[in-house]
Length: 218
Length: 218
DNA sequence: CGGGCTCTTGAACTAGCTCAACCGGAGTGG
DNA sequence: CCACTCCGGTTGAGCTAGTTCAAGAGCCCG
Image 1 (cartoon, chains in turn green, purple, yellow, brown):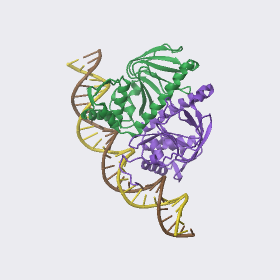
Image 2 (spheres, helix red, strand yellow):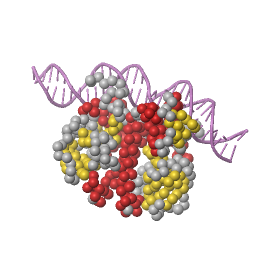
Image 3 (cartoon, rainbow over the protein chains, first blue to last red):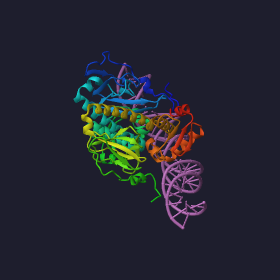
């Protein structure tokens, strides 16, 4: 079971994603829900109708290929909203990376409120821009540039301090950047060797030369 | 000048994109503009404030890296809208692929109209979903899968017939799929060898085995 | 103290890139 | 009407970045 075989090996996260879900369905605006780490909030294909806001923790948005290859399109941090759909079904999966608190809002009631719907519009515009920028990274940048850009991104979103807490495993970073976890690990080692970063632990990165890091992100 | 050198060679399209632009600025809703082939509609960094609808032709949306590497995030066909921005500046470039007719609308007046703004919301939701799906292709699919998926996509968007007119050069397809033009050409040759398609001309592809094509797109 | 995970590192392999030559259709001019 | 040229596309040969496969090393938690 642990000996994964070839390219068509099933992504281990499929089986890990737990169906732990709060009993109370989110019906009125702003229902708060607690999720354990690596829990599924909703899955690709499920009925949509609610949008969510991260209160604490980290949420990953992903799509799976039938053979298990996975692409993470975004990590959502506290304050971020996700789960918007034009149709009645979700077209991607949302799972927690770490234990997280999430507020659910009814999509229809959000649209009824003009102030909220203006905010939604803005969120969507930002989301589209960010996804297009990420597409450029994945489609045109090399492994070192992608990892450097990822660290800068997480640094900025995490408050701008020099110490960046990566709450996700290498596997998730790899699936976000379109790489393998081994390559992510090697690129981190290279950035460390070039004195751009220091690895306080596997998940705690200190950015010791932002300028160099930015130059490497291309 | 024609001997391009190495990975850092400047993208030829930078210099080709012509600044041919209609004199009349789009100020009232629905101003129709005509553009020659490979003309710039707006560039990354320019002031935004208008959104556009393709009336005829094809428009490509792209982002450039300083060294000339380019990622095309979308091709827009007649009926599609583009140019939405949350901020005062555009964050990507829009150029015609072939001679095109485009209608410009003032963003602010579109937002004022609630019916139009509901349509905008829907367009954005669709756009986000499509971009995420494209990210999965670029991040996780191999060259053959990407090219097969591209042909299926263009086939469906082009009306569903068996003969697909690709109005864009190989270079554009490559920059859309995150490949090189040589690889695109080789994958088309492979699909042809496997009898999934027939190349009536370089730009005219006949899909002779959609099922096989879909299987190859993974 | 032991059993899983996660992460790192090494070695070999390969998909796709790079570099280079050539091909063919669409003007263009003699 | 043919020769020439230009440009987009194809094809080949070799190379390399990143993957794959494999073996260990930490590390957290019971």
